[in-house]
Image 1 (cartoon, rainbow, N blue to C red):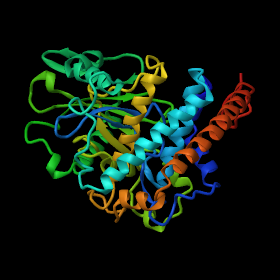
Image 2 (cartoon, one colour):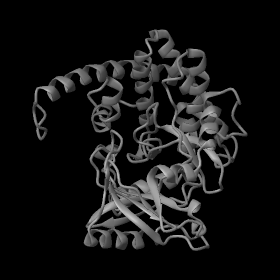
Image 3 (cartoon, helix red, strand yellow):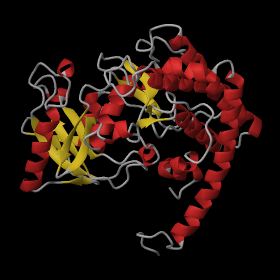
Length: 403
């Protein structure tokens, strides 16, 4: 988090919600204040995944903070991240403002398209639907060239015609008692896989388990395990790697006071998996949850076909603006599939209808308001980053050692 303002922003979602909870939100009413949101939407939380139908999709990713809240919170968090990204690339204020407006307009246009049709579950950014010259298409192509065999080669070794995890940095071998606990949790997890997504083969037997360390900024320090599982066949190239990671308390839940949500989730791992299934049409067929030593875990596949946007190579506004149109569309998609038409029952209305009703004919005012927020919060995040670094390096953060 100390590295730069963007890294600090990625790791401080709870601070963001403490701030926005105090602000007036003219776009939030009884319905639009309680829709499924990704919860930590920023420019680096978009990428590819292989859906349950075997199609490579570019979409919003990382649902560790997903919850129910104002639909605008996702857009505001994204807008501020674009400001910080624009600062890093030394863009002018006018260019940064146009970036946010492009994203906002694409979002609203896609929500309106869903409201006038009934095809939100069918809309996808794929190899077939994206411009072959676009940054999104390039990410999809990169994901397509990755293979399971290559991924397994970096994580495992083969001994006596059987695969196991390779030893290395961040890999911890388990004692028998700990392994037994993880295997018991895994067996409970299997019951959370929907019947329609279950494999009809030799799948699911456990080959190896290791403890893991070293996750992203938002999940730093959370206990985790990797499980090597038999895939669709006994062929070694079909083996599957699952992550079992402790779920964290969703940042938006710290400011959302809603009795309906109090008992809706067994634990944070359950909430993470349910949220992803709600927000992501045709989600990972391995996605589920379990309890390990009284702590909720989320379980999902570590897929070779996950590729994130590389903002280091996307440097010019004429590349970024078309990309932001796709990001706006992807954001609209996750909001609008997670409503009365999804398998989860917490949102009992059509999200697109509610959003269109609250925006009305004020599309440009909505975009301008997002620019205003993003600009102000980007400045605040830069100041907060400086304060954080000063406190960190001088040993003033409680619970952390000084120099």
